[in-house]
Image 1 (spheres, rainbow over the protein chains, first blue to last red):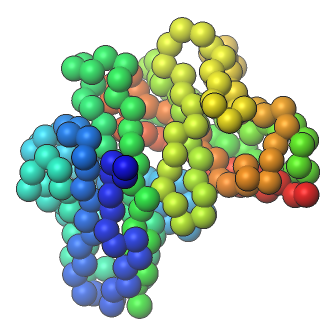
Image 2 (cartoon, rainbow over the protein chains, first blue to last red):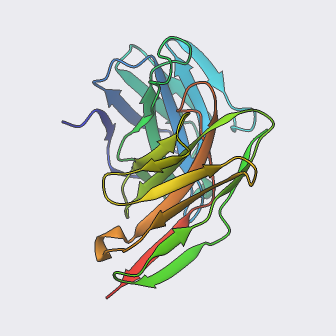
Image 3 (cartoon, helix red, strand yellow):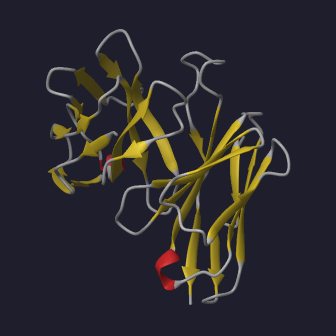
Length: 117
Length: 114
């Protein structure tokens, strides 16, 4: 029944070694988001896709990239992870504003906890 | 720009006691308001939301929140908490567009003790 699925749930990567986190959805939503949540902090939006249109938040570091090959999948690539990138990464989806009226609730995945060693 | 303030980082209460988690927001535009709950090592679950209409919104598990425009608040309340309510609670706002573009508060850890 899971609608937004993140794999893996836990990821350990080496300092400086590229890593990719995966998100898939069965909701057919146009919009997919990536949030970063550091320990004891609020989730912070990194970027989102509206269909194939990529929207980067102004303060998202260049080290973070994203790909969306199709409606169902979205990837978060960290090119050179640093110790400060250790966090929970949350994927979410929603319908787009305007088209769906008030029916644009966001659905979150379970998150991937990234450890950098 | 929008911002959310949750003044209480931790709230310990005894089981069956009432609780209020405070949330204030700042925005130059009309917003939607949300409360999310997060259990350890889990994602975020929507607890309740205010989009329009009645300013008092309720969840299925006994929580409620009231939108107060004049005080720019959206406090979360429950008259009697359970051990299972122990979690972190995040207040969030979005502009009146997609509800996935969220600004979160720093969260309040609710600890319910027997």
